[in-house]
Amino acid sequence: MFSSQDKRGMGSSRKYGRILIILIIISGGCLMAVINVSQNLLSLETHARIPINQEEEADGPTRNFYRPKDDGDYDPCDRKRVIIVGAGASGLTAAKRLITQQRAAPQSSSNPSCQNQPPIHVQIMEASSGFGGRVQKDTSGFSHDFYPPDLGASWVYDPARLALMAQNPSLDLSHKHVAPVTLPDFQAIKMVPNDDDASDIHELHPRSMDMHADDNHLWVNYTWYDFLHDHIVHPALIGNSKRQQHLVYNCPVDRIIQHKDDSILVGCGKREFLADHVLITVPLSILQDQQHAITFSPPLPRRFRRQIAQSKMWQGMKIFLEFTRKFYYDVFEWRPDDGEMDFWDYSMVYTNKRLSDRKQNILAGYYIGEPFQSRFLLPNQKQMSEKDMVQIVLDDLDQVFGRKRATRNFIKHKIVNWSANPFIRGIYSNQAVLRPKKLDNGDDDGPRRVGGPQQLWKRCKLVVAGEAFPVPPHHNGWVDGASLSGLHAAEMILRRLGYIESADDFSIPQDLWETAD
Image (cartoon, rainbow, N blue to C red; front, side):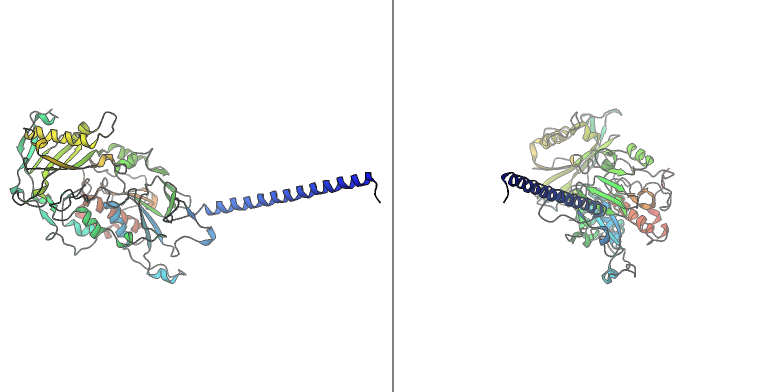
């Protein structure tokens, strides 16, 4: 019916038809792919605007969790969100004050369960794996004959302030865990130079030292860490759920960014959290590191940056040494112009055990500032080995007491090098960071007192507190100064949110605010 030529033409037509169909299918698929990609990109853009405060699952990589805008905020009760950076004495005290601010949620809330919820959602971002900061307790069993010692702060300045720190007026530990130092029983010695210019321990000689019992109290079978655990840490911080973690460990904050809608993004690595207010309680050394620690946007006020640049974070460590016998004074110290070296008989001072009753002879000590830097920092500012550090301490003690008494009687040691801790980088500030006469911020945060916490962004969006911003203003280096700084900072935020009417309603009494010249 068809010629061979016609058949060849029909074969070519079918061939080109199949090719055309294939091209149409491919082009249609590409168009659908483009549409899908566009939709996905739009969805990602919508999702990425609202990060949700949620931890990763127990297994699997760290990731961010997002929710579309039309699903609403992550908190069904629409509470104010406060993030505290740092779980030391200041941050924990602030968290307790904010969490315990009980007030019913707005009646307009569509969720009935919100009526019994606190008005503020609080989270703490902690860089390390535990709370306390520079308040830590030995758990190694070093002092088997005595109660485990504080590895950081250990002295109690004023036991009457413990109730204020714990926000419990009826708390009284004076007859159970706190006791004044029995100074008449101590041989207190001050190491003084032979001349005004002497800076070497080889040129020192002992002199009797006067100590005042009014400001020397110690824990008895208790520690500062125990106090934080028993009276400061709010139960809500420990009872975490996977979805809403109030205390987030291993989260070194590296950025704090305020958005145009006044929300604040707080990030640590790949994790991001949203807040309405942020309270910074990190050590002074972290604030001073403007390049490698925390990035702030907008930047911190220029005056504040000048303030912290003029302050100093002392380098230092704490050490415990066990000896076969006691050959040292009960208390002895050397305090040059820029630092201090203090030692005390831990076995007697903290436990009141006499030589006949004790099974261990433990000497505790601090090296702070110049005595630490001149001995333990290498020329490139790197830390020397722990073995070499112990040998230097023994050499110092041999020089003071002679006849190699320290070296010959040495058994073991326990060192806490706070300068080598990447999240602390020092032992405490050498002075409080003072508040300027005029703030860059226009908002009122209470009386223009010297020292104490400061607001860095308007409307208390960003507040700083901690050991270097103490209350009372000159109590840098003391746990009470750091804790009460956090308490005051929390109430600055509460006042901004309308829960406190005026600065006169703050918890800290006026007589604790000292006036600086």
